[in-house]
Image 1 (cartoon, each protein chain N blue to C red):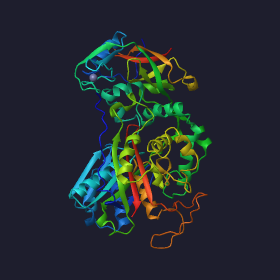
Image 2 (cartoon, protein in one colour):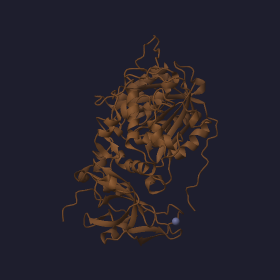
Image 3 (cartoon, rainbow over the protein chains, first blue to last red):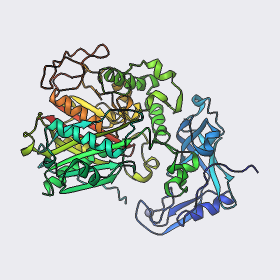
Image 4 (cartoon, chains in turn green, red):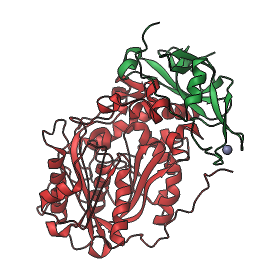
Length: 137
Length: 419
Ligand SMILES: [Zn+2]
């Protein structure tokens, strides 16, 4: 496997279950037991009802492109990948997730559509961290 | 249940018109100042004090903001021989100007001091630039960075561009319409001897410049410069002791936020910006509406930020911002000129200060353009805006609005009237 040259996040206690799932190719999402709503990103307290009773569920890995942009300038390891497409994904379970979109042509942005379906995939960045990317289907 | 309950944030109207801006000043706008932020800051404060006709004993409060790229108030006060009764140096960039003006009003109202100099000193080109180099890139990827830097997002343009794209998708807003923001601001800058970029540009110039992050071309993005700026605030009862007609403050909003501000993009319409919420403080507290505003200073970190704010503050209907910014309304001589100095796109990057300074001078009727001087620092304005090097003073400016931007989720604003 080629060395992963882009920034690798440092998991924290609130997000640890997400990263554990990512290693196994699962999109783990935090859901409030009291109000049943999913929120992204992970945190101690439900932003909707302030319950501290949060469970982790395996998400469907399905979503839709909410919006996107084509990055022609970037920094560090990402500089070598320009142009690439960043996007917000509307998760099937609720809330939005930021990502780099795969399976699209950054030189043909007119072909990328808000609302188009996407599926999650994971790339191993290190022994401890796999990173979620979304691919147009 | 949601904790995002709408609060009544109106202040009552008891501070409306009770405070004023009485002095403004700046350094040159350069790339490569060759000076420290300490030196630049004292230079801008001195110029603002001279503008008002003040001695060191006339200032007893100081406020500044920075992104760890400035020098704190006590050092500048010492350099200038000013004894302070109050100072505070806060963290922040865009949208701090109006917020700090509100803080200045509060501390004067509390009896903590009488007159406050607010400054922003920055070597925004030669020292600390916006973007992904230096210390910001070296920091560990955690917290917010986990959702951003992991995916290559470091700079403001990278982060805002998705909101801009969705606006184009939802409302059919075109690159040509947005380019007109730069075109109009460049026309204004061509009549501003201080402006860093004085050349007028065309829509094609903008569209033919390279993409930084689509939909942003290079010329959709503001200039980065080295400069310092200063604004002096005092109470209305002291505001007429100085050289110029004061700019009376009718209302102010500071760092007003969208819901779930931490990552506001994750919730609600992504092209709605903080102005949607700020307008409900700004206009009721002033007792005015958008139709009463003669001139705007809508923050132009990018062409899109000007448009989104004008739209969400209600200067046009949601979705009609593209039309508003391209139909000539914002031009000098138009119905409601915007950023007559050339703003951040052309005059210089100050994190909002220069747009307030410009509106203060417009309200005085004493814009510093190239019209003939009549002695005592005044000019005979021609009101001919047609050619570079011409007039920049708008006619009949009685009420102005400044719309400051930190990011889509946070904004500040202020309405002033001619004193
Ligand atoms: Zn809940």
